[in-house]
Length: 227
Length: 227
DNA sequence: TCACTCAAAGTGATTAGATGACTTAAACAC
DNA sequence: GTGTTTAAGTCATCTAATCACTTTGAGTGA
Image 1 (cartoon, chains in turn orange, blue, brown, purple):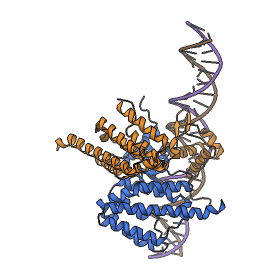
Image 2 (spheres, rainbow over the protein chains, first blue to last red):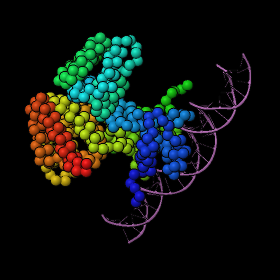
Image 3 (cartoon, protein in one colour):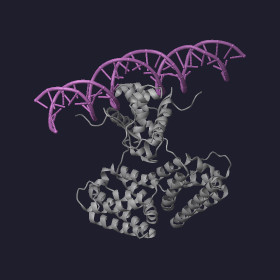
């Protein structure tokens, strides 16, 4: 027996290996499916199945008529499930509970590490938040906070959590007071810059708990009367 | 223009929808690719590309000659990247740092929730750990701890972290003292059963920090002399 | 010279049909 | 009954072709 794994799975790994050994960076294109097929001595449909696997995890992107591009997620360990997952309010609250459980610890670590690039990103996220319609993705501040911890796994974790969160229509409805959000973020950032891990942790927790309260209240306003 | 998304992506969603509406549970089989092709009015290769996407995220499994089966991960939000990611010791330490940042908070939540089923699983994980070669996956205790929090996102997060961790050959080399591991786990479980969140959090942190120390020491033993 | 048009080449998207390999279970022989 | 054989169903892979989209650059006109 040659190998227990199917041809497609092996091919998928070989393509990833190729990307790594040739040091292809996100944004660059892979050889065409035809070329890959010839190189690995398989047919085009087989290559396409392998590429679909990589596409599902965000490692590559297939652009019709243009080419196959390497994407950022090829370097990620933690991902969010890209396929349809039903999301209701209970799930949204569950996500917030998860953030309440982990983000204080991340903030504490961020206070001791203070990854410079990420800290300045937190500032700009702070500034932009007050501008209306700046197209700054919600939660940007929190993602940068995780990045400030200097730990890629934690960063990816928060990116994933917020990606899932953004799919929740319910969450979008709840407009946490913009000004209050900004002030609390500023307080957290202040603690981090001072290197005060304890305070950063505490303020992050309080901040998220306040958001949860607001979400639950917003829910009561919309859904409550119908009952 | 009918839709911006490609046919395969739409088809993938439709298949997931079918699984949900027909309430197919993990372990059950999907209709054959031929049947799916007829139902959605596409050809077999297109169906296969969609199934490969779902396969990559662990939502389904294609068994040669048998059928296509629904798998557990279809209900997961957080996943680990199934494709090759280079893993060295620095990455292993980074994962431990991530666990140190988040697991205390999870333990604290677990102490207040105490999901009964998971708590008893923690006990058996404790018992089995002392038996040699019980084939209990490393980290089982910690996964059950996360499950005891009653928060699925946290549970999935720890499953993912440990899945990545298990791919690290380096981590396997470091044999944290079995007895000490057991005792520290027992202490954590004790605090959780008492509902003492503060103590559960504190003990979990100390436990993981001790493991990190052991990993670094083991690394120094093996790699240090060469320098 | 500049800007616009559009035709051609390259690439992915999808289809069609066929063959091979594996699994399962029913039919059969003992 | 038990074990083997057979057949049907399924995934795996291939070959071959057509369609659709993007990009590029040559050609055209102002």
